Image 1 (tube, rainbow, N blue to C red):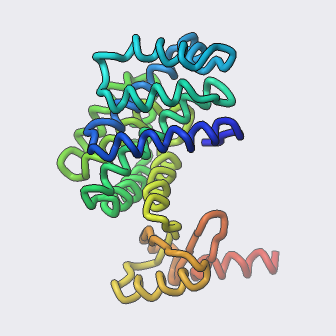
Image 2 (image 1 turned 90 degrees about the vertical axis):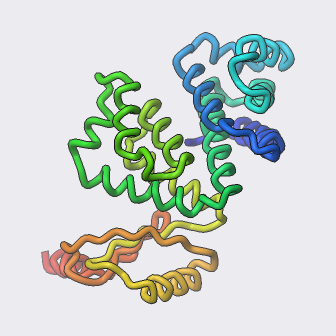
Length: 269
């Protein structure tokens, strides 16, 4: 998501409200915020009204309160009220902001019960599964299929196998893709979980499985190179022939046999 200046300020301010209400361990906060974001995504007129900076913040907050009282928790209402009372660069960025806040709420909840590592790993692994199975990706992104059916498929796939936080994040992405690809969306969520732990993500593809000792050495090396904590996301691709391909942000370190052969071919082409 890209936010302009006003929206970045609004998001930062509302996050303080979110973290404050989340101190009470508000269950379901993330899921309810996703639902409100979905409502505003569908209702263009309501979205524009709640993001109209030419009207008084109190009026916008009053409208949101009248619509949502009794339908969401007090914690969710407090966050939504803070959001619609802020100044956003556009109505669309209000929706983006609410979705970002929902993601943060889910990750904070996972962090508090010690499951943030698991959420990050589960999101990454599911992204790799989807990337490798074209039919599954097609089924989960079929716009002609009702959202309920796509979410039901996710629940069948993940039910009892992942944390509640992971399930909530994946279900929202499948139900409300909002122009995002499923694999890239899952990668972005995994990266958000890593940032929550103040770490960067290194996507590592190897020709074979790495031992725990190899993973430790690689993590230490990358942390020295980038001068910050690094989280490894591992993938095995026998077609590499040997070596590793490492991607950190926009930087790719290709030390694979295939990569070296490709480089030679380009040199002599």
